[in-house]
Amino acid sequence: MPHTLDADAVRMWCGLALDALGRARADIDAINVYPVADGDTGTNLYLTVESAAQAVDAAFNGHAATAAASRPTLADVVRAMAHGALIGARGNSGTILAQLLRGMADVLADGAAAGDPPAGDGAGAGDCDAPAAGAADAAGPAPAGAADADGLRRALRRAADLAYLAVAHPVEGTVLTVAVAAAEGAERAAGDVAAVARAAYEGARTALRATPGQLDVLARAGVVDAGGYGLVTVLGGLAEALSGESPAALAPARPRPATPAPVASDGQGPGACPADGAPDGGPAFEVIYLLEADDTAVTALRERLDALGDSLVVVGGDGLWNVHVHVDDAGAAVEAGIQAGRPYRVRITHFGAAARKAGAGAPDRPGPAAVLPDQPGAQDPTGGPRAERATRAVVAVVPGDGLAVLCAEAGATAVATRPGEPPASGELVDAVRRTAAREVVLLPNDTELHHTAAAAAAQARAEGVRAAVIPTRSAVQGIAALAVHEPGRSFDEDVVAMTSAAGATRYAELAVAERQSWTMAGVCQAGDVLGMIDGDVALIGSELAATAEAVLDRMLASGGEMVTLVLGAGLPDEVAERLERHVREGHFAVDTVVYQGGQPTAPLIIGIE
Image 1: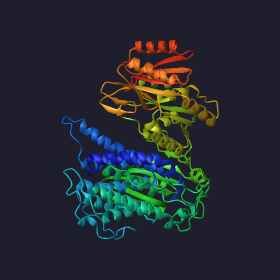
Image 2: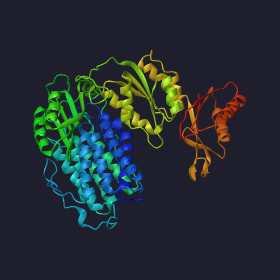
Image 3: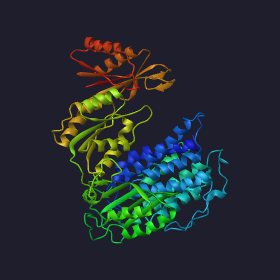
Image 4: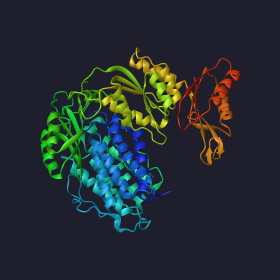
């Protein structure tokens, strides 16, 4: 069903875009060859949108917590989205995406972008056909608190214009080109706001396919622009949120196998003469920081940073900026920020290892990063650790305090979840840093957290940590993996053993239905007990213990040697005793172990090994 462009639609857009980027993250990383082949564009875009989505959720939660339990307006939400993207922007593409979102927020929040730069101001942002805003929108005027089709057209144009102005030396065949095509597609489209969003997506998708013909480095690698691919993915989320229908599928990102790292000769991309520590010939370091500074000081900062390196992008405004540049002298780039205002969240990434990996066709581990002293896990400017690291650690996401204690006793670092508040990738990265380990295994223990864990692992690799994610779908699979964890083995052998143990563990969960609903096992009513096996509702019962017995019988019918019962908060011990007795009397040679998990949402989690 079509949706108006209101606060709820923006929240839905952020969620859909984040899910889509999570699915495409590894593919986008794999085709990242410009401006530096460091294999992290998909991860950077995911982290940027994740920060935007969290800010939007916070806006809703903040309004819900007020005495009047009000709801945020469209202006509240788009401003929160833009601010979240700004403070969480990662990498070149993430920084540009933050500016695109800011441009959209300028129009959608204020109703008009007063003082917009001319359409032709900035390379590539040339004049286009007259917008289709003159045609009557099929849906008529937008309801109060929502933007109409013309508002979305102007928002996309403002976004493209601001993005071009933020980049010191715009290059065609990149995310900038795709952004302009999206704006032009929207301007040509008649109809309601959903039709405009679909046209923007189609325009961007068409432009993306043409990027190899505009940028030699893409043509030589046989790929489309990675940042542009990410932007099309984000616009697909917008089109789906407004139309209620998934847009036409984006062609999969498939780089040519074993393609050597390209060498550019146009001065815009990697040059022919390698810099120290930068095999692709570009600057050796990526420097990113947030900056509190007056607008006037930023003009001078741009000039100074432009003289120091390339890939300069400065986005933001109103006293808060996100600065991104590639340089050989990282200290000078930070010093320029100090002279302009107050830089913080400073990150310095060395490109050497990343470029070598990407050039060999294995962009799985970017080079080390230096996190300056205002952050946990500080390292020296070359990426080397300041303190001796532990050899290997495990980070596990768990839904209850009891499980957190259990994981800690097994030697893991636990990240406890809260009902309705899954951890962000940044929380997992912080947990990885706290381990101070050279090698880390992540156990997400929830299907919905696999993308989050993958993004955290990618960030950990960027900081010089060898990281792997075992795709555990339940806490009991995580327990099984921890049981066979052996730091004395090689990293690969340990990961294989833990993955095998988790995969050999079937899992079930009992929950209480909150309302009437259709399930795989039929219609349930509010208060019914749902027995979910491997993620699907398999049984519906009226009493928890009896339903749990039926679930155990069904799972053990195909075999099993060990039953694990994880008791939720408030579940009586008598239930566990009854289930232990049921297994002992009804299933020969099957052992049972019981843990007090303390999880607040699921009364009982079951594992069968």
